[in-house]
Length: 358
Ligand SMILES: *Cc1c(COP(=O)(O)O)cnc(C)c1O
Image (cartoon, rainbow, N blue to C red; front, side, top):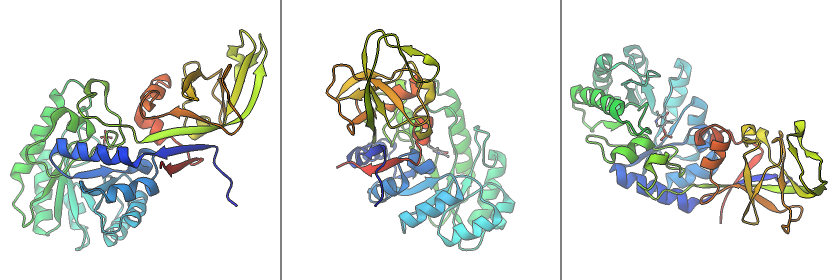
């Protein structure tokens, strides 16, 4: 018998489906859905089959060769693009799996196995990966000659900010590369937009795919809220493991940060920073108990946190909500933890069970 998890992430397939539909409509292209880092913490076995069945999803994008292998197995027949450079032995394995290879130099192009499909990566200003625009065209020509140029892409550094001047400059550099590439039998699949760019720009001329990550999972920068009705895809819950009373004047948790002003009903919850709930949210965090916002008391621990449940009807084994789609979202938790939604979601640990919500 497998024993139950103390914390669970409920995945809402209907929210994911609607988000993908809305993002594809706004970009005017099919999606190359980023599912790196375990689908932004939502779980590859849960998200990949849902995404692969969506009519607007062309393929899936991952960050590491290992992820590419896992995703290729979960989505047979679906294109998978690796977004970071593989080593030569990895290229051979990935090409056999049908994974699309990112290429940024003539040497990489020349080392491709004949059956590999490549996406030319252009560095237009992120300065992380890719060929500089002035070198990229030559690499693209070589890939096209070899019949291996399926796609060409770049990545924005600032598309989620209100000031879009640098994003426009990156787009201009990318368009110049696209214009200089030779014609291929199949039109090359150009892609640039992350979620921020789709929301900010809408359809971009010449683009044939888009790569919205965080927005697909339902989160949007504050200045872009309302552009699309996106909804968070995850609810996070954890169980009450113990109930007790802290007497007036006593402290709760490590370092005595919180002292009970009067006798207080305390619920101990089975989730902590080892599960990815940010320890930095100590002194600010709240949770939902029976739908009511209640404060977390004192220091958030590795495996547990304590909540004031005075006056509520709570039993051991009840589920408390750490975040959910409407009120009290990952955006709130990230703010309490001095971090961003990306880090909170991708930090969710293995002890958190991912289950599809009914
Ligand atoms: C992570 C990533 C994305 C998705 O970015 P979001 O900000 O989550 O939309 C797109 N493209 C590349 C290359 C990435 O690394």
